[in-house]
Amino acid sequence: MKRLRLVAIALAGVVIVGIAAYAVFAGLLIGSDVASYSSDGVTVSDLEYEDALTRADDAGYTVERVGSSGFHPDGLDELDAELGPEYEAFRVTFDHSETKRLWATFHGEDETTVVTLFADDNRDDFTVDDLPPDAWLVDRLTLLFEMDEATAADYVEELKTEIRTSDPADPGASTPSIEIDEPVAFRATYDSLTANATTVNASSTPGTGWHEREYYAADERLGSIEFVLSRATVTHEADEAIYRVHLDYHGGIRVDAQTRSSRNFAEEDVRAVFRQMFEEMGIPPDTIDHMQLEYEGSVW
Image (cartoon, rainbow, N blue to C red; front, side, top):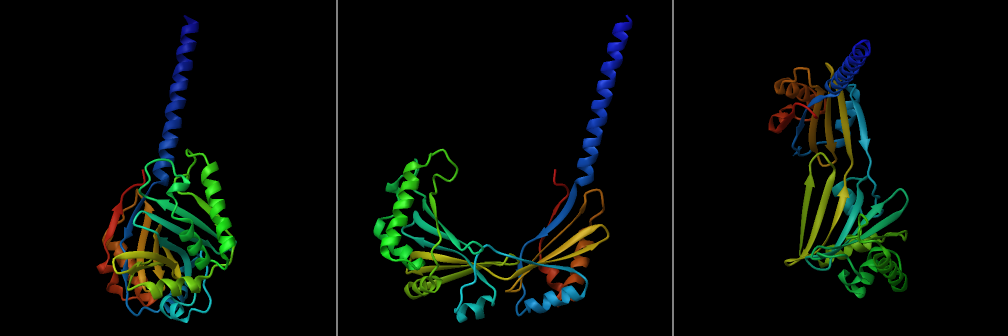
Protein backbone atom coordinates (compact mmCIF):
# COMPACT_ATOMS: atom_id res chain seq x y z
CA MET A 1 0.00 0.00 0.00
CA LYS A 2 2.86 2.30 0.91
CA ARG A 3 4.50 1.50 -2.44
CA LEU A 4 1.30 2.41 -4.31
CA ARG A 5 1.14 5.69 -2.39
CA LEU A 6 4.73 6.49 -3.37
CA VAL A 7 4.01 5.66 -7.03
CA ALA A 8 0.95 7.90 -6.97
CA ILE A 9 2.97 10.73 -5.43
CA ALA A 10 5.69 10.29 -8.06
CA LEU A 11 3.17 10.32 -10.88
CA ALA A 12 1.52 13.40 -9.45
CA GLY A 13 4.93 15.05 -9.31
CA VAL A 14 5.57 14.22 -12.97
CA VAL A 15 2.20 15.69 -13.92
CA ILE A 16 2.87 18.85 -11.92
CA VAL A 17 6.31 19.26 -13.48
CA GLY A 18 4.81 18.72 -16.95
CA ILE A 19 2.10 21.31 -16.31
CA ALA A 20 4.68 23.75 -14.98
CA ALA A 21 6.93 23.21 -18.01
CA TYR A 22 3.98 23.73 -20.34
CA ALA A 23 3.04 26.91 -18.47
CA VAL A 24 6.59 28.22 -18.80
CA PHE A 25 6.64 27.37 -22.52
CA ALA A 26 3.26 29.02 -23.03
CA GLY A 27 4.49 32.07 -21.15
CA LEU A 28 7.52 32.29 -23.41
CA LEU A 29 5.32 32.05 -26.49
CA ILE A 30 2.99 34.74 -25.22
CA GLY A 31 5.86 36.95 -24.11
CA SER A 32 7.60 36.74 -27.48
CA ASP A 33 4.43 37.09 -29.57
CA VAL A 34 4.04 40.31 -31.53
CA ALA A 35 1.29 42.25 -33.23
CA SER A 36 2.24 44.08 -36.38
CA TYR A 37 1.17 46.34 -39.22
CA SER A 38 2.64 46.27 -42.72
CA SER A 39 1.80 48.42 -45.70
CA ASP A 40 1.68 48.38 -49.45
CA GLY A 41 4.17 50.57 -51.28
CA VAL A 42 3.63 54.06 -52.65
CA THR A 43 5.90 56.42 -54.57
CA VAL A 44 6.35 60.06 -53.58
CA SER A 45 7.30 62.14 -56.62
CA ASP A 46 10.33 64.44 -56.38
CA LEU A 47 11.35 63.11 -52.98
CA GLU A 48 15.02 63.84 -52.24
CA TYR A 49 16.31 60.49 -51.00
CA GLU A 50 19.54 61.66 -49.35
CA ASP A 51 17.85 64.69 -47.81
CA ALA A 52 15.16 62.47 -46.29
CA LEU A 53 17.81 60.24 -44.69
CA THR A 54 19.75 63.25 -43.37
CA ARG A 55 16.59 64.65 -41.80
CA ALA A 56 15.78 61.25 -40.29
CA ASP A 57 19.24 61.12 -38.73
CA ASP A 58 18.84 64.67 -37.39
CA ALA A 59 15.51 63.64 -35.83
CA GLY A 60 17.28 60.91 -33.85
CA TYR A 61 16.00 57.97 -35.87
CA THR A 62 18.22 55.01 -36.72
CA VAL A 63 19.17 55.01 -40.41
CA GLU A 64 20.40 51.74 -41.94
CA ARG A 65 21.43 51.67 -45.58
CA VAL A 66 20.58 48.27 -47.06
CA GLY A 67 23.13 46.62 -49.34
CA SER A 68 22.79 44.32 -52.35
CA SER A 69 24.73 41.38 -53.77
CA GLY A 70 25.04 43.03 -57.18
CA PHE A 71 27.58 45.51 -58.53
CA HIS A 72 27.60 49.05 -59.89
CA PRO A 73 28.55 49.21 -63.59
CA ASP A 74 30.94 52.05 -64.42
CA GLY A 75 30.57 54.53 -67.25
CA LEU A 76 26.81 54.42 -67.85
CA ASP A 77 25.89 58.06 -67.24
CA GLU A 78 22.38 57.47 -68.55
CA LEU A 79 21.64 54.88 -65.86
CA ASP A 80 23.42 56.89 -63.17
CA ALA A 81 21.07 59.78 -63.92
CA GLU A 82 17.95 57.60 -63.93
CA LEU A 83 18.71 55.11 -61.15
CA GLY A 84 21.12 57.03 -58.94
CA PRO A 85 24.90 56.99 -58.54
CA GLU A 86 24.88 53.86 -56.37
CA TYR A 87 22.39 51.58 -58.15
CA GLU A 88 23.50 47.98 -58.66
CA ALA A 89 22.91 45.51 -61.48
CA PHE A 90 21.54 42.35 -59.91
CA ARG A 91 20.56 40.05 -62.77
CA VAL A 92 20.37 39.81 -66.56
CA THR A 93 18.05 37.33 -68.27
CA PHE A 94 17.93 36.17 -71.89
CA ASP A 95 14.91 34.40 -73.39
CA HIS A 96 15.52 31.72 -76.01
CA SER A 97 11.80 31.02 -76.22
CA GLU A 98 8.71 31.35 -74.05
CA THR A 99 9.85 28.33 -72.02
CA LYS A 100 13.67 28.33 -72.23
CA ARG A 101 15.75 31.12 -70.73
CA LEU A 102 19.06 31.95 -69.11
CA TRP A 103 19.58 33.89 -65.88
CA ALA A 104 22.88 35.51 -64.93
CA THR A 105 22.87 36.59 -61.27
CA PHE A 106 25.73 38.81 -60.13
CA HIS A 107 27.61 38.43 -56.85
CA GLY A 108 29.67 41.58 -56.64
CA GLU A 109 31.57 40.84 -53.43
CA ASP A 110 33.42 37.85 -54.86
CA GLU A 111 33.13 39.05 -58.49
CA THR A 112 31.38 35.92 -59.71
CA THR A 113 28.21 35.29 -61.69
CA VAL A 114 25.88 32.32 -61.38
CA VAL A 115 24.38 31.35 -64.73
CA THR A 116 21.19 29.29 -64.43
CA LEU A 117 19.16 27.61 -67.17
CA PHE A 118 15.39 27.13 -67.07
CA ALA A 119 13.14 24.91 -69.18
CA ASP A 120 9.55 25.46 -68.07
CA ASP A 121 8.17 22.95 -70.54
CA ASN A 122 10.25 20.13 -69.05
CA ARG A 123 8.20 17.67 -66.96
CA ASP A 124 10.93 15.05 -66.48
CA ASP A 125 14.54 15.15 -65.30
CA PHE A 126 16.53 17.99 -66.84
CA THR A 127 18.89 16.68 -69.56
CA VAL A 128 21.26 18.36 -72.01
CA ASP A 129 18.49 18.08 -74.60
CA ASP A 130 16.53 20.65 -72.59
CA LEU A 131 19.24 23.28 -73.13
CA PRO A 132 18.99 25.91 -75.87
CA PRO A 133 21.34 25.25 -78.84
CA ASP A 134 25.08 25.53 -78.20
CA ALA A 135 25.40 28.43 -80.66
CA TRP A 136 22.80 30.44 -78.76
CA LEU A 137 24.45 29.78 -75.40
CA VAL A 138 27.91 30.71 -76.73
CA ASP A 139 26.51 33.89 -78.28
CA ARG A 140 24.91 34.98 -75.00
CA LEU A 141 27.97 34.17 -72.91
CA THR A 142 30.35 36.09 -75.21
CA LEU A 143 27.95 39.05 -75.09
CA LEU A 144 27.58 38.99 -71.32
CA PHE A 145 31.20 38.32 -70.39
CA GLU A 146 34.61 39.41 -71.58
CA MET A 147 35.47 36.04 -73.13
CA ASP A 148 36.06 34.55 -76.56
CA GLU A 149 33.95 31.85 -78.20
CA ALA A 150 36.34 29.04 -77.22
CA THR A 151 36.11 29.99 -73.53
CA ALA A 152 32.34 30.27 -73.78
CA ALA A 153 32.16 26.83 -75.42
CA ASP A 154 34.19 25.41 -72.51
CA TYR A 155 31.65 26.80 -70.05
CA VAL A 156 28.81 25.24 -72.07
CA GLU A 157 30.58 21.87 -71.84
CA GLU A 158 31.04 22.38 -68.11
CA LEU A 159 27.31 23.00 -67.81
CA LYS A 160 26.53 19.84 -69.77
CA THR A 161 28.86 17.81 -67.54
CA GLU A 162 27.12 19.22 -64.48
CA ILE A 163 23.75 18.12 -65.88
CA ARG A 164 24.95 14.63 -66.82
CA THR A 165 26.64 13.93 -63.48
CA SER A 166 24.13 15.47 -61.07
CA ASP A 167 21.55 13.45 -59.19
CA PRO A 168 18.06 14.40 -60.46
CA ALA A 169 16.85 14.18 -56.85
CA ASP A 170 19.27 16.89 -55.70
CA PRO A 171 17.81 20.34 -54.96
CA GLY A 172 18.28 22.57 -57.99
CA ALA A 173 18.82 19.70 -60.43
CA SER A 174 15.86 20.93 -62.48
CA THR A 175 17.52 24.35 -62.88
CA PRO A 176 21.20 23.57 -63.61
CA SER A 177 23.75 26.31 -63.02
CA ILE A 178 27.46 27.06 -63.25
CA GLU A 179 29.62 29.72 -61.63
CA ILE A 180 31.57 32.04 -63.94
CA ASP A 181 34.36 34.29 -62.68
CA GLU A 182 34.98 36.18 -65.94
CA PRO A 183 34.53 39.99 -66.00
CA VAL A 184 30.98 41.05 -66.86
CA ALA A 185 30.60 43.06 -70.08
CA PHE A 186 27.58 44.90 -68.73
CA ARG A 187 27.71 47.87 -71.09
CA ALA A 188 27.76 45.62 -74.16
CA THR A 189 24.81 43.64 -72.78
CA TYR A 190 22.83 46.76 -71.92
CA ASP A 191 23.54 48.35 -75.31
CA SER A 192 22.57 45.16 -77.17
CA LEU A 193 19.24 44.75 -75.39
CA THR A 194 18.46 48.45 -75.81
CA ALA A 195 19.36 48.50 -79.51
CA ASN A 196 17.37 45.37 -80.39
CA ALA A 197 14.25 46.25 -78.40
CA THR A 198 11.26 48.05 -79.85
CA THR A 199 9.63 48.30 -76.41
CA VAL A 200 11.08 48.55 -72.92
CA ASN A 201 8.73 47.98 -69.97
CA ALA A 202 9.99 49.30 -66.64
CA SER A 203 8.49 48.35 -63.29
CA SER A 204 9.40 48.90 -59.64
CA THR A 205 8.31 47.74 -56.21
CA PRO A 206 8.18 50.90 -54.07
CA GLY A 207 10.20 50.85 -50.87
CA THR A 208 12.25 47.78 -51.81
CA GLY A 209 14.66 49.33 -54.32
CA TRP A 210 13.79 46.64 -56.88
CA HIS A 211 13.58 47.91 -60.48
CA GLU A 212 13.24 45.76 -63.62
CA ARG A 213 13.36 46.53 -67.32
CA GLU A 214 11.94 44.03 -69.81
CA TYR A 215 13.02 44.24 -73.44
CA TYR A 216 10.73 43.27 -76.34
CA ALA A 217 11.14 43.10 -80.10
CA ALA A 218 7.52 43.39 -81.24
CA ASP A 219 5.78 40.65 -79.20
CA GLU A 220 8.95 38.66 -78.53
CA ARG A 221 10.55 39.07 -75.13
CA LEU A 222 14.33 39.34 -75.52
CA GLY A 223 15.20 39.41 -71.84
CA SER A 224 15.43 41.71 -68.86
CA ILE A 225 17.76 43.52 -66.50
CA GLU A 226 17.03 43.70 -62.78
CA PHE A 227 18.50 46.51 -60.72
CA VAL A 228 18.59 47.37 -57.03
CA LEU A 229 18.36 51.07 -56.21
CA SER A 230 19.83 52.71 -53.13
CA ARG A 231 17.53 51.89 -50.22
CA ALA A 232 17.44 52.38 -46.48
CA THR A 233 15.39 51.58 -43.41
CA VAL A 234 14.59 54.31 -40.88
CA THR A 235 13.67 52.96 -37.43
CA HIS A 236 11.96 54.73 -34.54
CA GLU A 237 11.24 53.10 -31.18
CA ALA A 238 8.52 54.61 -28.99
CA ASP A 239 6.11 53.33 -26.30
CA GLU A 240 7.49 49.76 -26.53
CA ALA A 241 6.81 49.63 -30.25
CA ILE A 242 9.10 49.68 -33.29
CA TYR A 243 8.23 51.73 -36.39
CA ARG A 244 10.12 51.34 -39.68
CA VAL A 245 10.03 53.37 -42.86
CA HIS A 246 11.58 51.66 -45.90
CA LEU A 247 12.69 54.18 -48.50
CA ASP A 248 14.36 53.85 -51.92
CA TYR A 249 16.06 56.24 -54.33
CA HIS A 250 12.96 56.67 -56.52
CA GLY A 251 10.87 57.84 -53.57
CA GLY A 252 9.28 54.43 -52.99
CA ILE A 253 8.02 54.01 -49.44
CA ARG A 254 6.72 51.10 -47.35
CA VAL A 255 6.18 50.99 -43.59
CA ASP A 256 5.79 48.41 -40.86
CA ALA A 257 5.35 48.50 -37.11
CA GLN A 258 5.28 45.94 -34.32
CA THR A 259 4.82 45.58 -30.58
CA ARG A 260 3.94 42.86 -28.07
CA SER A 261 0.63 41.23 -28.92
CA SER A 262 -0.64 41.90 -25.39
CA ARG A 263 -0.50 45.68 -25.94
CA ASN A 264 -3.14 47.88 -27.47
CA PHE A 265 -1.99 48.72 -30.98
CA ALA A 266 -4.64 50.87 -32.59
CA GLU A 267 -4.24 51.68 -36.28
CA GLU A 268 -5.07 55.33 -35.67
CA ASP A 269 -2.15 55.64 -33.24
CA VAL A 270 0.22 53.83 -35.62
CA ARG A 271 -0.70 56.15 -38.47
CA ALA A 272 -0.12 59.16 -36.19
CA VAL A 273 3.45 58.02 -35.45
CA PHE A 274 4.22 57.51 -39.14
CA ARG A 275 2.67 60.88 -39.95
CA GLN A 276 5.11 62.50 -37.53
CA MET A 277 8.06 60.51 -38.93
CA PHE A 278 7.14 61.51 -42.47
CA GLU A 279 6.93 65.17 -41.51
CA GLU A 280 10.36 65.11 -39.89
CA MET A 281 11.85 63.28 -42.90
CA GLY A 282 10.45 65.78 -45.40
CA ILE A 283 7.85 63.33 -46.74
CA PRO A 284 4.33 64.77 -47.15
CA PRO A 285 2.62 63.68 -43.90
CA ASP A 286 -0.63 62.77 -45.66
CA THR A 287 1.25 60.05 -47.56
CA ILE A 288 0.31 57.68 -44.74
CA ASP A 289 -3.37 58.32 -45.50
CA HIS A 290 -2.87 56.78 -48.96
CA MET A 291 -1.25 53.58 -47.65
CA GLN A 292 -3.15 50.41 -46.82
CA LEU A 293 -2.10 48.90 -43.47
CA GLU A 294 -2.54 45.17 -42.89
CA TYR A 295 -2.81 44.04 -39.28
CA GLU A 296 -1.52 40.75 -37.84
CA GLY A 297 -2.48 40.17 -34.22
CA SER A 298 -0.05 37.30 -33.65
CA VAL A 299 2.82 35.42 -35.25
CA TRP A 300 1.55 32.07 -33.93
